[in-house]
Length: 358
Image (cartoon, rainbow, N blue to C red):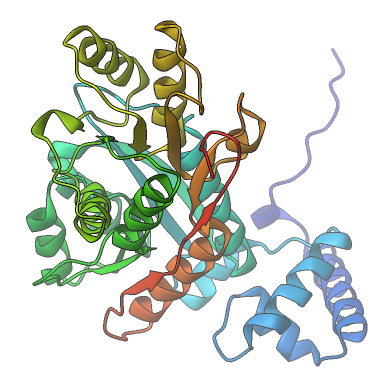
């Protein structure tokens, strides 16, 4: 039986074929250089993610390369440069609640990181680890499979992250900057976010403000502190039952909210630590025959795309996730190049929509 002849593997191609491929790629690179207005050597450096080329030029060159269907033989380049060009992006999960990676915030920040890594010529290895075993996040680095590690969220194990940093694992965490921190964090100003949301509710006439989130998590703890700052500023004494310490998990939040109503806790507003938790608060309020925002105002956190399209559109704290991906990758590349960790806290802003009284 006659069978179609398979293409020869690159390593077994004839010298003439290899030379032709090399010439074709050289011509493509020359086209990119001409269109970008730079030298061929600059194109080569930009496509390899070299820091010798400024970020704006790197992005322009990568976009032109994509438009010309130019691809780098990454495996061959890694062998030539002896440089690993893969980064591990780790999304921890709570073994009890198992918050889904389909959470809009996770999708947004993973997408932002993927774009930033691609622009630098890096690949992304996406994985999940149990939040109680965060040290497992360094396994791909220890095995030589990745050049560095990005973790989305600190959870409750600040000590494990410090241990990884002490071993000089190139590491950046999306999260809150904390005292005695050895590792690098990039995150929003959580305390100010909690303060802005709570102050907005108080300005709208609300005095009994429920907080929905788990203060054992560093980011949420800072948001709760901002909440307390705003209450204190307004002369409001918080009540113990106003704190619903729930994980980032919708079913648990809804159950606790329903229990709170059944227990007779009176509140006129909710500061939720994610947009999904805020939507559960809206549904729980409506289940009692009350209305949002006339009876109860609700604010969320993150400003996920669904916030603008919910019913009613959700007032929420916007986190600059698009910018965060770039800053996280920049911080990781700096460590890979031997620079010390440098944390960044980005400003956040309240986006006012119709789920609150203004």
